[in-house]
Image (cartoon, rainbow, N blue to C red):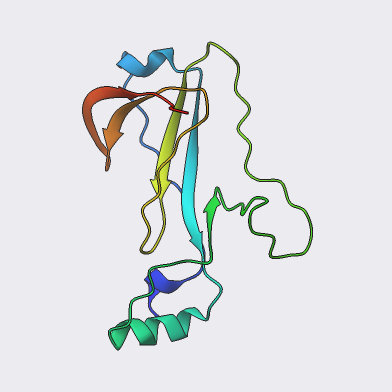
Length: 132
């Protein structure tokens, strides 16, 4: 089986900012991993992919490996991923898309985001607001 089809996540490598960087106002930094949950044999999926059939719809999406309450695969109520935050503090979320064929977008109700990097490159920061 090809390595990219191993059904697991290995690690997050984080490169820290230099001392004196603009982001010293960050209260806490954490990685947020968005991924897919596939209910199929990955070896069969690989063979189908080689034959030209591309699966583009996973069974569910995950956030830091948690399926949450929208997809109950174990029959037991599970908590989704929770990031406790304090009002007025600034958090650096390192959002990683580990999906095979899916694009995921992240919004948190009632919060604004300032995007400072994309694809491991710093960009001109821009802000985005949550809309109802």
